[in-house]
Image (cartoon, rainbow, N blue to C red; front, side, top):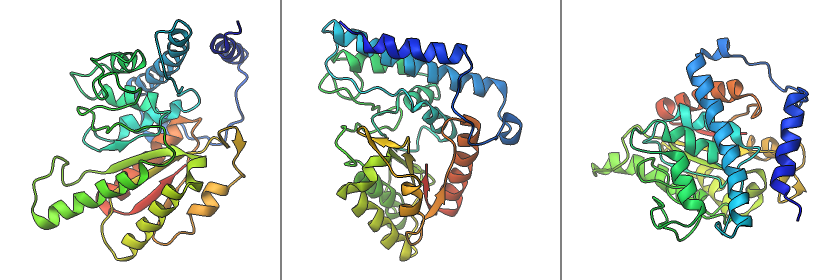
Length: 280
């Protein structure tokens, strides 16, 4: 039997050993973003653990011990968002957000991100969010509502959560989310073509056009492929940047210093300016 997980891992190790990396698309470095060695190592640690959990998931499935897996390999750059944003910033996550989950878990003293994901993989009753019913990223402690892999279905919920922050302040209603919270929503490039995404993006423009505060950050992880179908070059930027009342930012997902820089900029705009953005 062909073990695809090991084949891919061997190819990865070979390319790293040969220093055969993709061409750099940015030159942002640690000094520019004032990132110390401890944070850089922590981010790398989360990225490596996410990749290893992908391999373990495949191995468990081959043994009949795991029932549903979607890997996060290739999306490890999202660990940065788990570092930059607060645990109280509710996150509606793309199903390839293993590194984000692991990095955010490090902000909570009573949370073991690796254990949480392993419990989810084997459908354990002790899984903190689904109780063994489904493999999802989710945690009450980490402010991560559980999401299925249904395309773009979490975008409308993220918009509703963002609106609720402002409405709670207007109505004087006690909210579990701090008044200066941000809502995060990550998804893949192909999802932007789904009706759920399009209606949400349009609604964001309409609401923002009414000058209504919307502390919401959409994070599109554009790897150029959606379910093995190529995404046209610059499609995400050209289809989003021109939308009314949006603030669009882009970064190099292969350079976590560049992601870190843009994430900090997005955080300032969302938390202080309460603008709308889109990151790729």
